[in-house]
Image (cartoon, rainbow, N blue to C red; front, side, top):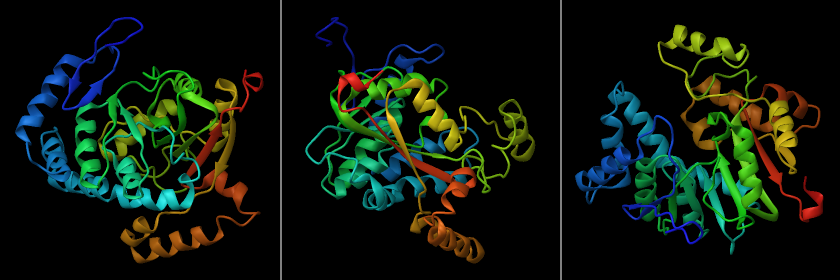
Length: 315
């Protein structure tokens, strides 16, 4: 129950549903589906639950299901690498940390393995059910809620740090997302995010084909459909320049863009030539004269936006 306005919100499988009504999105139907899913997968592991959910989707063949399941189950280990590389310094060990767009909870589970507490918000209630089970399996205490990134159900200044990995490219209203993050962050709080680079020379990671981001946006859907037969929905790729301009236009936060390494787990899964290229990329990415080139054509980038420490410094 909201103490301000008196509105009530349901809890499904111990997950608060704080979503606002969405045009064309039946929240009541999804809640009933998740309640049914809880009964159908009672006692199941996160992996078994995820496999059950994906296998019921139209067009998801066993190979595709298996690939996605491996990604999710391996995510906590990848998250530990990211914490070591750059995210541990962003989080507050004793503060309120938020994974915005947490999906099936891989980052939160990885943080739990390192005794870091992170709460999660995501649009998908079924994804949060999987997140709850995955976090518990890795020794964490799930603190999860369904909500909208563009209308966060949190008080202003309540959050110490926000992590939002591979989320911003899926949001049509990125300004609202950034402004909401800035609102809920305390003064001096930071947002850490990662996103594929639009002008990367590697394949577009959502569909696995080259050249998508180099096309004007209005032609990207038709190109992906022609090359793969799949629809290319809810993806709006950004360059590092686009992100710098977006943060400057929509917020008063300062931005640092980081050239990341290719994760070792991904390199281990590459073929011989691709693995060699990945190791070479990791070796040269930090060279001063290489960094501007990597910002333009590297496969993806990380960024940390910092909210001004004083109110007078904000817009």
